[in-house]
Image 1 (tube, helix red, strand yellow):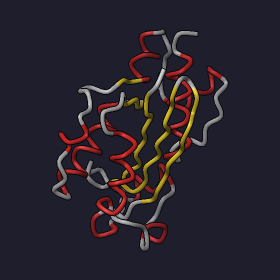
Image 2: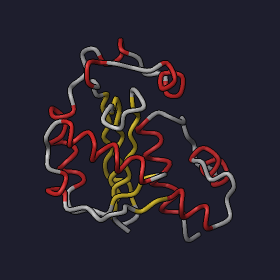
Image 3: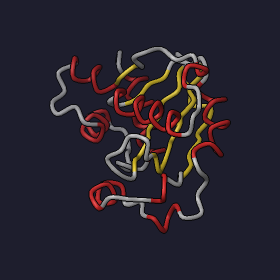
Length: 164
């Protein structure tokens, strides 16, 4: 099985406010690459609610790259691949809205719609709640919840274990 797992954290309730990304590349059932970056959101603006969730603040991203600066790294890992996320509609819309905000062409990534979704998969298995932290705990997967790379890795491991 080969795929790419992705997770975004956002700075505000606006989907184009990505402030962190984690990407796990899996080929032949093995993690072959990990990529993560902080991202400076528009105007480096944060809501207290989002900070409470992930702990990322304005100070953390004041010198971070903007999305267009890291987009080539994202594109080379995602283009044409099977993409997996936990609650894929959220992460897919963050990618789409952030790309739209910066006038980047989402269609050039040639991704399926929707992506593969471990939230849906584990709900169908009867997990309730089916949040990433609960699913990972039940599957014995170590997770630092709301840290983008850890969440992407947890999602990748859940996807790999779905048929076990």
